Image 1 (cartoon, helix red, strand yellow):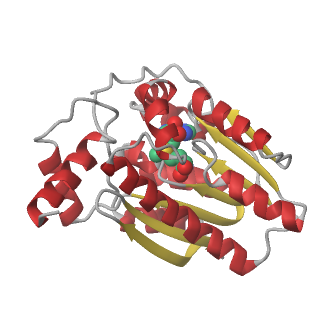
Image 2: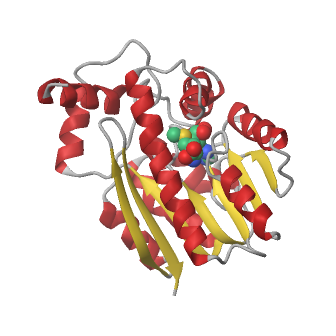
Length: 269
Ligand SMILES: C[S@@+](CC[C@H](N)C(=O)[O-])C[C@H]1O[C@@H](n2cnc3c(N)ncnc32)[C@H](O)[C@@H]1O
């Protein structure tokens, strides 16, 4: 592919595979302790709606072995597979998942939760608790796990702000792209509050290059709109982890033609 065409396509993809319809503000109807977090996450209603409908159909295909994917979607699938594999490699290298609890926030169709549960089946003992804001996504994840005979993973529908409890490891992979910039630090703080030992988070990094690519892509809105896409400054994520008492222990960057994801593992110090 010619370089310009490749970048143009990548830009369009950044802007349209994850970006789109302008959401109305979520009127502050929630009255829990997390009121601030709830009332200002104004994209949430649209994200839920999207991943229960058009987004579910699209991402269910991307996160599968379906042949019904175009070149861009195939590239995104390959990039995402790499991120998942990097996490599994870290967990396997540590060899310490036996007897542990894992909470996967924004689990999608279970692309990480299921192999983590399977890994655990060999070692016995860990419990996977996975949730997603989209009922269609969490239901599909549960169905996939059931079809594989997995019993040590439960799936439920919840926005990540409402997830409660304490877990050894908390994971949140490729969810932050749907998360407003100004709420990112608070979201990271919430994930950390759930984690006794480790947080694994991935996000599209806000660099001048990816920013430019995104802005350029917005000039070419595709036929199918999804949700707005947010890139995040790495220092904001690192600072939030630090503030919550975590230290980055491992890091990776996965970049294909159309998929960009920075992955950080942080451990409680
Ligand atoms: C790009 S998919 C990634 C799914 C999964 N983490 C993976 O890597 O396979 C993003 C997922 O985040 C979910 N999501 C977005 N905002 C969320 C929120 N506030 N709370 C929980 N899930 C959310 C979406 O429904 C969608 O399933």
